[in-house]
Amino acid sequence: MERINAWNIYDLETQKACSSFAEDYRNFISDNKTERECVDAFVNEAEDHGYVELERAIQEKRTLKPGDKIYCAWMNKSLVLFEIGTEPMENGLNILGAHIDSPRLDIKQNPLFEKAGFGYLDTHYYGGIKKYQWTTIPLALHGLVVLRSGETVSIRIGEDPGDPQFTVGDLLPHLAADQAKKTMGDIVSAEQLNVFIGSRPFSQDEESDRVKLTILDLLHEKYGMVEEDFLSAELMAVPAVKAVDIGLDRSAIGAYGQDDRVCSYACLKALLDLEGTPARTAVCVLADKEEIGSVGNTGLNSDFLLHYVEDLAEMAGANVRKVLRNSICLSSDVGAAFDPTFADVYEKNNSCFLGRGVGLFKYTGARGKSGSNDASAELMAKVVGMMDQDRVHWQTGELGAVDMGGGGTVALFVAGKDVNVVDLGVPVLSMHSPFEITSKLDVYSAYCAYKAFYKN
Image (cartoon, rainbow, N blue to C red; front, side, top):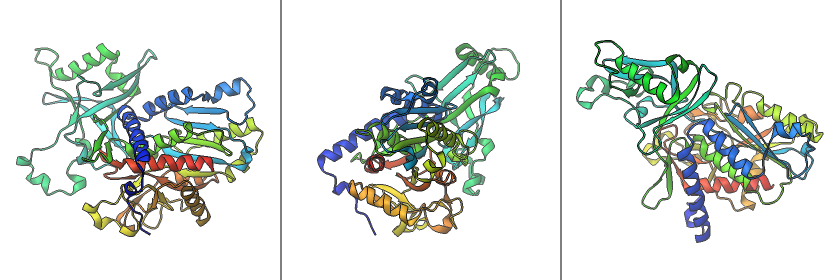
């Protein structure tokens, strides 16, 4: 069943709404490139819409009532928001679950070194990347450091006009004969992903590591850091690019980190833009660590979501098991968009295309559905009916041809809490690269689908 390009269907008013939504999203994803930055931005916006922190609600011994808005920021890396519905909580929750981490280069705990007059930061890549794509592009440093004094200092270098930027080097083609014989995975090794950070010696003395001393002097002057403070730092190198319109027709968006901040943004906006109080309690989960398997206490393989739901159920006098068993979740993660340049790795009849709407994925996983959730026929019918009722443009697909590989989402971890789950997200070109492509129409369609889900 082939879906047509929805640009042919949208009227002028809807196209304007689509463009306006895309412009706001472009600004957001240009400014927020780490999970901590996303949580800060989303909390500020939620509070502007009347959301109250859960701990405050507990301290005030609030009795939950329809329309109450609660948020929980976990470790400043994950976020859960609730709008209490008119129906009893035991009737179930409508949950949107997305993630706010993206592939990047993490700075190691003992990273700073000098070699042949160059200062470098050693990195450990995070998530699935093609390592060669991270060379010769402008990079910015984001993160924080907890100093020995206990003070926490934010670091963000390379985003503002006049800021220095950073890069990872590559070999010039004139000398790359041996490199050209290597396979794609070996062209650049993980240990060669060193971020060039400086080359000016600290003094004219004939001593080693004088460039390193210059870097340490600058870091101490601006941030109060000493070398040992790298151990208690979370720093990452991310592309220093701003989100832009792609194409003469401005139909697409190019940006770093669209997997999965595009769905996270659409999920949050759908919740904040709800008109009136929903029937079922609406939940938005924005999690960390999906790109490395949803591990750790900020990933959805942990129980932080379960514990927050337990807190809310207790406040509402509800049985948490019944709450979860009657709940539905849309795992709001991106999918692979069909790329005609590399058509042989897709199965066209079961692929999503740019401009044809949000993608509905019955299952993800790899090859024999390993690591998949595999939604039920009943849930598929319910979600399709919901979107058709609200005239949302949607399509269905898989990540690619079956034996070519695959990938997972947070769906199986939410399903492990006895919640009925299916994947619904934005198709992306060049996924996991430093510069991913989405269609403005698909981004807007996702937002419309998520709003429809909260209403039903």
